[in-house]
Amino acid sequence: MSHKDKATRESLASELGELKAKYSQLEKAYSELKDQALPSSPRQLDTFYHEAYIEAASELGHS
Image (cartoon, rainbow, N blue to C red; front, side):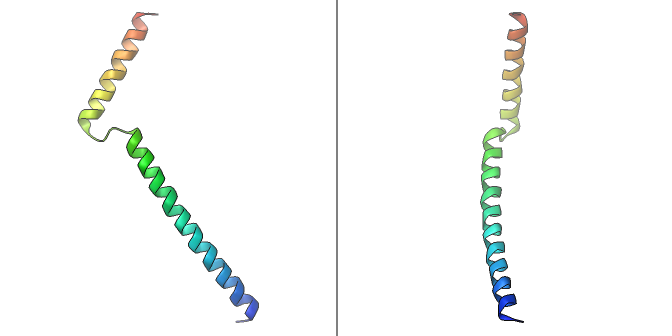
């Protein structure tokens, strides 16, 4: 392997490592946002839908 090929390979390997780290960070941030956006238990989900139903019903009643 030539010196140029070795340098290119090392550069690409470094870039790949950086991309893997960035992907891991993005995956973690996405997971945290998803957890914040969605209720974590069925009871919370029931409460969420119940509150949304009440809000929608009250808006329809005031139209």
